[in-house]
Amino acid sequence: MKFNKVLDNCKIYEAGKPIELVVREYGVDTKDIIKLASNENPYGTSPKVIEKIKELSKNMFMYPDDSMYELKEALATKYSVESQNIIVGAGSDQILDFLIKAKCDENSKILMAKTTFAMYEIYGRQTGCTILKTEDAMHNLEQFEQMYNEHKPDMVFLCLPNNPLGECLDREDVYNFLAKVDKETLVVVDCAYMEYASYKDAKKAIEPADLIEKFPNAVYLGTFSKAYALGGMRTGYGIGQVNLIKTLYKIRPPFNITTLSLAAAIEALKDEEFVNECIKLNFDEMKRYEEYAKRKEFSYIDSYTNFITMKFDNKYISSDVAQKLLERGVIVRDLTSYGVNAIRITIGTQKQNTRVFNILDEVLALLDKQENL
Ligand SMILES: *Cc1c(COP(=O)(O)O)cnc(C)c1O
Image: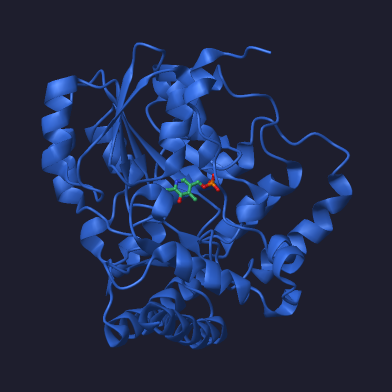
């Protein structure tokens, strides 16, 4: 059967491997598996949110409040914007999909960093548009500017901080770049990890109200999947000028998040203390990864997120390391398909990380031995 020809160029998104797969394929006991592949919050969901979900599970027979009044009010208060500036999606992923559909067709061009969140390209290809990437893997604004001037893309994607590498541009530099971009160009500022970045360094912090006021052609994306520990609830949001948000509503399917997702997000916003505690622990634990990498003499990218990307240069092949870790129950993300010889590890809990270092010691020793044979 023939399908829409734009799909010939589309890749299927490769998600982090689930725990069930490791149990099935490598016979590792479920309790011994450490999943550090999808940047989930390793401390689990806030107990207050879990309580609320239990209480509301009796309402599952009903459609959710399609206006999402309460959640949008809570987000509007948090970010000092109006409800009409907000759209909620099944993950910020869904907002990305809406944005690209709203702006692009097969004649459009979109610009992004060479190594960045895979869904920009995947959704882009679904419209048949042209994908432009900078030469550098990490965000390089000089290259963005040069390519912007040369190709005049319809959309630009900035991932701040960037997944899967972990680097983050300074707000001031981002603003200087945005000031040079034509108002007809839609700029997506994907801030899935902004809670982490702004904690680590105030120079990285971008406030959605300030962003969209200064740059009406920009849209801010946030998610409950990372710092707010609700990956399984699929809830994210976009913040932009009213006209843009209204346009996105033309694409939004009805009831696009569930009753329980709505309730969980509303409750999670009330427990900022939990989020702050998780973020603090994240950076305490990240130091241990940095020290580990130094000890083993491989490089890592200074990270503003809840993961760290370790580069193996010529020392190891990242897919070998990832595979050997997987066989021992540690799930990480190999970045070979992103064009870098590196693995991305979500920062786990103290106990998980200690085990990761022990298993990594074992894996690297094994690879050293194979090398010497
Ligand atoms: C995780 C992530 C998202 C989206 O996550 P959702 O679960 O769909 O909200 C978006 N952008 C980046 C860079 C991410 O890492």
